[in-house]
Image (cartoon, rainbow, N blue to C red; front, side, top):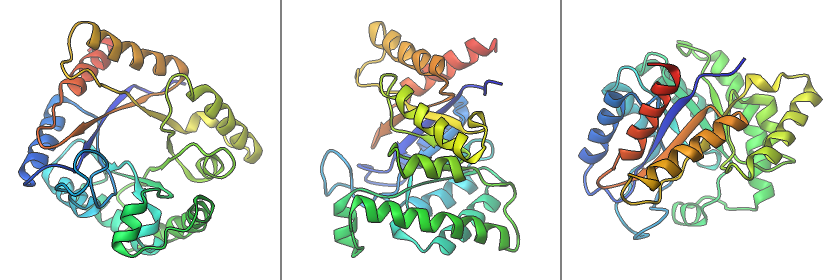
Length: 271
């Protein structure tokens, strides 16, 4: 059974000199019918001025939980290295309760060396960070089951990454959603590896929602640029991706691409 197409927006918490720009962008996302608003878990901008304005991930998610009433919220993705796994589970449960059951717990192993160095975390290696994530996942799920009060719902876990031996194995074991940071060209091979990991443990791979980014580098989204965006989205859907996310940057948070994708989603559904 195919999952409904959903549209996500990653509101990148960078280059906004005051939080009001982000508050307004979340409101606009909810008003236009975006399904999920994501931020990211970094301490400095990823592009543009490396020392530009930036805000912290989970504090922001708590604010979004109060501000919104329909849209799902989460990080794309939380860095496992920055918080004790039990603490992260408690934070997720709390934001889930504040939002009345709208949190998605997105998580990955981490990769940005400046974040680690500036904030005093051990960067380690790609392998050690993945091993840390593997050790954290059962601790997170165990703590979520113990917390009082419990989460409002079984919090969906989204794992981000495409490493074939470790990351995709964890997706098969723990995730409700997988964001592979893939394109239409790279997705099929990675999806086949995930399906094989699912077969190894007897899991139906169709129970994992597939997520990918839809790039909009056009600047002005009309004509051929709009056609290319929607063709990219359709190509991913044809491969089995059902959650399509576009990233937008501060301070203006131009949601033209998100609006076009929401309109395309609704037209496909006959809305």
